[in-house]
Image 1 (cartoon, rainbow, N blue to C red):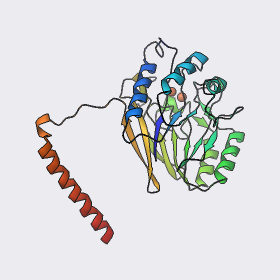
Image 2 (cartoon, rainbow, N blue to C red):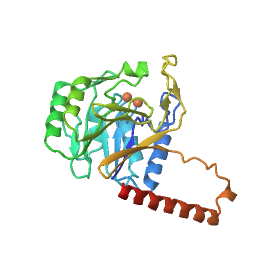
Image 3 (cartoon, protein in one colour):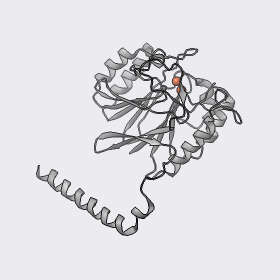
Amino acid sequence: MLIAQITDLHVVADGTLCSGTVPTNELLRQAVERLRTLRPRPDVVLATGDLADHGTDEEYAALARLLAPLPMPVFVIPGNHDDRDALRRAFPDHHYLPTRGFLHYAIEDQPLRLIGLDTVAPGRPGGELCAERLAWLETTLAAASRPTLVFLHHPPFDTGIWWMDAIGLTGRRRLEAIVRRHANVEAVVAGHVHRTIVRRWAGTLGCVAPSTAHQLALDLAGEEFLAVNREPAGALLHDWRDGTITTHVLAITPAPSFVPADHATPETLAKTRAYFERAAQTLKAAETLA
Ligand SMILES: [Fe+2]
Ligand SMILES: [Fe+2]
């Protein structure tokens, strides 16, 4: 099962730019086209918050239009830039979304169980998992022992980028204790930081996905406050196979090749391919014997 994760789309009203500079709608259009034409095609798409920049109906209408070409199920959760009710209004056919209260849910009809969390604390850029949401997660995790992926907007750990950590997630200690009690949580994946970040957390894999639009500078020295840049836009591909998740970073814009055209003739490619096929067989045979 291939799970694409897009995050921090920051969609704006048609004909405008995010913060006056970033063409977030056009960048999302490119991301959707990349996912739509990817082979193999992802089975589902998770959109992990900051879907709209100001949370207005107009922005969500643009978001719904931009996501519409995706033929696979798309599961959305809100981020600090989102508005729960406006998001609900824009996706009336997303029946997995609760009609009232927090936008958290479990998707049960996929090979990997998917649990979306709502970390929104209205009016604040930081996130929150209150007692009610944590209790819901505890009950939901306890209801099934199948392998599960948890997704939320705010990472439940510090990333080393101090000013983003300053608007991090409260309730993370209790979340960590809950996740530790459930060894079937294969990964906890987030957004918010507009960078690719991976770390061990709560005995499982913790990931942060890059934005489909603008990225934030890798500023571990604490010197580049609010540095938004044009590092390549991306998405994560969580590949669930053989009982484990392998996560890949997908660049939205395919990169040109370094291999000169005359190095890649059909004859040289066929010869090299035969070498790799033999190597794969040799490795498999060695592993069978080991
Ligand atoms: Fe964001
Ligand atoms: Fe955010």
